[in-house]
Length: 155
Ligand code: HEM
Image (cartoon, rainbow, N blue to C red):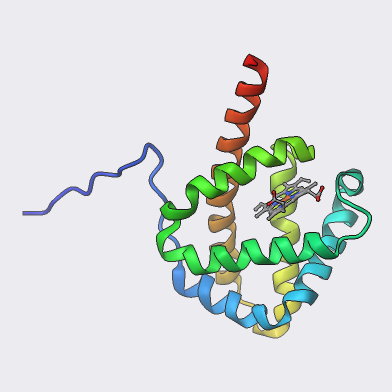
């Protein structure tokens, strides 16, 4: 008899290409600083209006984002475990001035930066895998953001 698996959340995680995610991240991770420089350069070029939301000195910011990506890399096989952290992160982003429309811009700047840093080792399967993973991360962050906005409106 085949057993139906019952998702324990209303939005079950779509299948992630774990191998592609892990291989590609590990390829780029030794160049984490370059990845951050490339990502923010791409982000501020694509969306100059978000530059003022960030501090002038981006050093700490780059370290924090890289840390978040490393945590994500370690958690890929159990994303549910970091969903509460992602919701809290998304809630904090409301105060930073991040709005839902910014998320796809951040996603393509990040994936574009990964491809640039990886160079000829990059594969289109990596981009597809990261699109999907980023969608889950952004989705969880935006859930937290929505909740924070509702709470702020009710206060
Ligand atoms: C995958 C999506 C994202 C991740 C993983 C991420 C990660 C982070 C992390 C780890 C921090 C450090 C502060 C904290 O932990 O609260 C941060 C700060 C920040 N993020 Fe994001 N972020 C994401 C999306 C966005 C988007 C879409 C925007 C919109 C422009 C944004 C703008 C900012 C700003 C303005 C700060 C604060 C800078 C400061 O005042 O120090 N982030 N982000």
